[in-house]
Length: 287
Image (cartoon, rainbow, N blue to C red):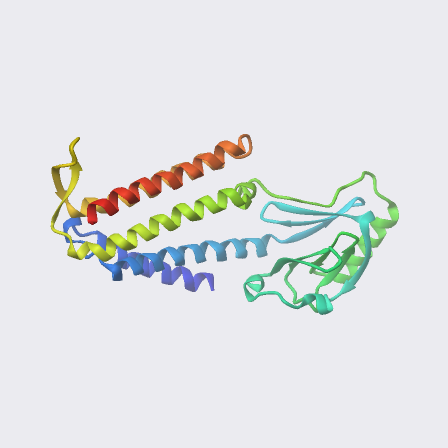
């Protein structure tokens, strides 16, 4: 799936590059081209998501010691203390219902909450009815060791030895993808808002672009009179500049988040403000 999607994305990207390889004054900007660009961006996001799942599937592994069971993927680790495991089972039974197809691409993943307050976590390459299920008082884990019988025997032997130190049930995110930043609801909401504003303004500009004169009024004096005319394609660089500023703020937010969460959030809020300011400028000019 990933290889096919990459091929389609590259082909579509090359077609768009050919369009924009012409001089800016000859760019055929309209809603049709805008839709093609949006589709290309959506394909890029899908490629990124599939790449993540492929990498997660190939790095999924399970480790044991006398203290705990460790589930690893892409630098992340879920810790399950052996002393908290109540029993093992095969198959999730009725608890395996209700999972979406997206969570079965590459490997079976996802999280659900039960009526008793416990959570189910899937980290398996086998379907729900064939996965090894680890039960604790707090959560349930579906996994798929290569040799289930040997794995269960090893786990029981280590449990009988007793824990050398006390562990806490936890998911330790890796530093590679800076999950804490992306999982912050405030940050995520502001990022989505900034991106959505940029797309809406580009769409309005693309719809209006064919009707604009070859030169438009883009500079005004203190009394609001036109001070300079610029080629209409210069308008296209205003949303692009706003988008690049948002990317810079996102990068700075990633660097700052671990030490200064508020500062990282303020940067993403500033991105929304920048998008609004540039949007007002573009809409004022095209109307």
